[in-house]
Image (cartoon, rainbow over all chains, first blue to last red; front, side, top):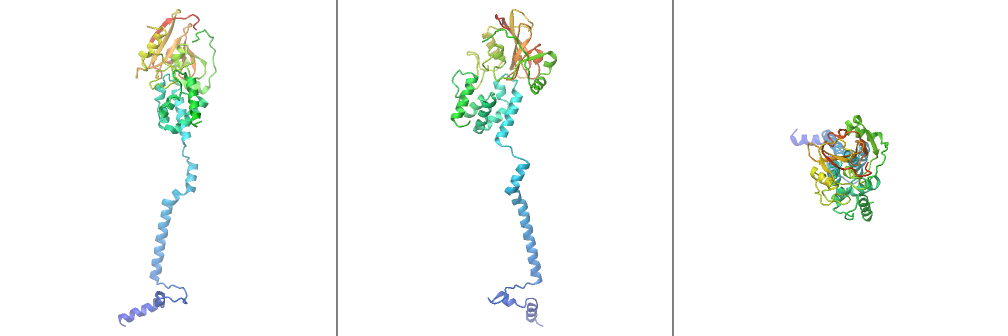
Length: 172
Length: 168
């Protein structure tokens, strides 16, 4: 048996309809005949692809899926800006309540953090001032660079002036 | 300024606040004190010592309105500035804190580390002292050392003026 005959024989044995597979007729059944090697390769390729999809889902999609993000936030909620302000304000009050110097109380790290929050903190400061009082005038002045209190006003009238300013600007 | 001799009455403070106070001033409980009013944003200790119950006295270095500092006194938080404030109100430096019935005395506390004034207490005719503790309560305390410690430092300067008629 020469080489050409051997090749034709093998082709007929393993893929008897090879010719039709490459040149299909419309009236032929839609059947694909594959060799064992091709089937093995296909299965291998599919399993590799499926593994890659699983890995991508695990690494990329799952951590970013909205459902999982919401569930994670419920387990370990991210403190919002109001909670941050309340914590800082509580700490500042507790640790500076007995200090006699405004400069010393205003230089407290928690107070400086509140000033560092910038204009975001202004509504919270004004609400705190309205509800619980406190020496917030320095922080308001430092953030807004304004001073609505009249020259020579005492503490109570300065507080009232700041609350009116807050109402005018829609902060409270 | 009302300097009438008012009868001091003990005020009930929240236990949580008392715990904070006695932790901050560990000698206070042992040496005796009496809370005379609750927490208030104003005055602070200087205003309280000078019978001004309406204002918070502070050099207020950034100049925000609402705080009082006598005109002509340097706006610095130093022992010298505080001394000038009391000199403006008739006080003169003296050497000790012992009771002199004809004089009203104040004691200025300074922290050794920073050399800045932290507190001032005023002596009553009974020999006891009264203090407004920042924005906290005001108290009557038997000794100056009751408030001495890390927080207010120690009294380093005593000043006196003739006791005004009707002063407590």
